Amino acid sequence: MNLTRSAILAATIICIVVGHVNCQAKNETSSAKPESPKEKTNVKQSKLCKKCICDFKNSLLDCSEKLQEWLSTEEWEVLTNGNFVFKTINLEHNNLTSISILPKYDVENLYLANNQIDSIAVGAFQNLTELTVLDLSHNRLTSKVLIPDVFKGPYSVNDFEPLGKLKTLNLGYNDLHSLDADLFEHIRYLEELVLCKNSFHLIDQLSETAISGLLSLKTLDVSYMEIEDLPGTILHGPRDLDTLIAAGNLFKHLPKALERATNLTSLVLNENPIESLVGDNVFPPLTKLNHLSMTFMTKLYKIGPGAFSELQSLTELILSDNKFLNEIDEEALSKNVTGGQYLDYPPLEKVYLNNCNMTTLPKPLLVRWDKLKALDLRFNPWTCDASNDYLINVLIDHVNKTTQVLAKNVQCASPDRLKGVEVLRVANEHLVESSSGSLIWVGLLVVLLIAVPTILGAYVMKRRGCFGVFRRHDSVAVRALYNRTSFNEDFHI
Image 1 (cartoon, rainbow, N blue to C red):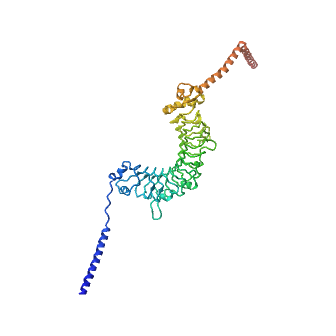
Image 2: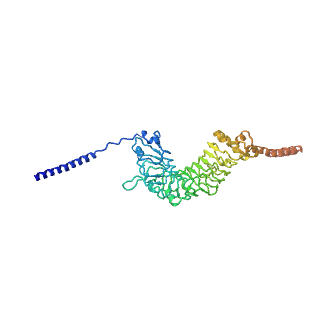
Image 3: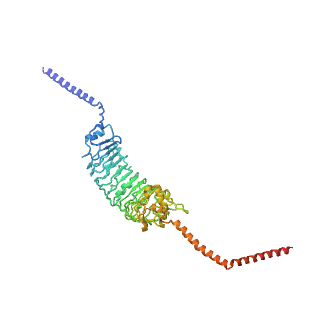
């Protein structure tokens, strides 16, 4: 009886165990089956597109001034599992204070400007592998916050990959005073770097190392950084740099670093306290430079000979709004390239000299004024007399024919009788004699001064019979010659 009960109990236990195993096996088998693909979220019908502007035509998600905090988990889910991928996301003007590690998404342009960001997580952008433009300007970033690993890319077996597609980084208008020497080690393919409006005061060795290591850099903005100079080797690395913006600094002389920027095509030096371009303070050979802007220079008063001579590809020269600029040497642009008798000039197409203190414009400054498509001479105290003959009788007419609007407000400041009169009117009404006309009158006067005494002298001599004496002497000589000839003839006979 006991054996029977024991056998029944053992059999029961075995059945339970076997049943559990079979059940577990069934569960494992069922869990091994692939899940059905998750259904894509209809982005257009989502709450996110009711909160923000979803511009599908331009592939733009605009949440500027729409958020109280970062996008929620649900809102990121709409993006990461959505049926549409926005290439540009704008999160500006939202008072965001920090950036955590962002989820994987194929956004290309991310704008985070005009927030209150003062902290960024390590690897914050590592999942944004398609990112090409990152704007972090107008925030509260400091040098301590901005460390190299902020920009590290996705993790690989050996190390973190770089954010290889990031080309543009805007760090302007923050609280940076220096850069970590290795700041760009994960984004070494940058082509555009903006650092404007960070009070560096001095670009130290660490910052110089960071910038000079960007070998693919094409555009560098170091404007309004309160620096007095550029380190000598800062432009040694980025040999392809074609645009340098260094406006609003404290340069008293042209930076020597420009000598290394041999591929520059555009240079902006506005609002620097440079007083003159003379002597050694002239531009080095920048054979590819075609755009130069030097405006609102509060102390610039003179541009001397050879100032722009080494810029023989220059097509646009902007010197406007320099209130003290009153002298441009006639040899400021010319260069004797061949060593011959002719000078070479850059192929200028646009020259802006408006709102300066110019009184005269030397004709030899440019050999082909007629090639200019725009010449702005407005709001200068021009002298309207023979010393400005070329401007009055040639240039202003050319300006009026090419860009009529630029011929207005080109006015005389002297002499007093022509003060406030437009130069075009002076030219049309011939209110000032041209220098060529003056030369004609001087020539006529010289002729009269020489001719009148000569004619009077000849008349007096004729009255005194002097011409008759000459005639008698001539007839005697003729007779003597005739007699000698006759004598020779007689001798041969």
